[in-house]
Image (cartoon, rainbow, N blue to C red; front, side):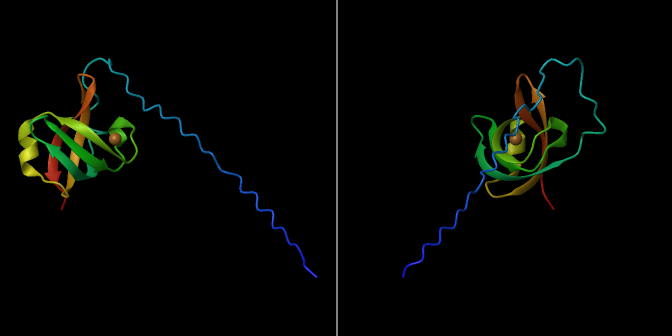
Length: 111
Ligand SMILES: [Cu+2]
């Protein structure tokens, strides 16, 4: 006697479609409201491109940019910022939109 037990495991694949509309309207007038959203974001340095003036950071949420955590590259406002960090460093930073790209405006080692 063979008993066939057929466990019907229908796993409904929860397809959560996250609208990736990171609202980055480029042409708001004037400077962004400074105070409230000027918190530092946490990040970890993944790549430093001194010649290209770029840094790749694995970062946590950046409230001021409406961005969740991810790994991405940023420009830098001041190339000298890149001299202070190396790959693997944990950092705190601020980023802003400038000329259509995101640039790191402040960068400091995390404590
Ligand atoms: Cu990002």
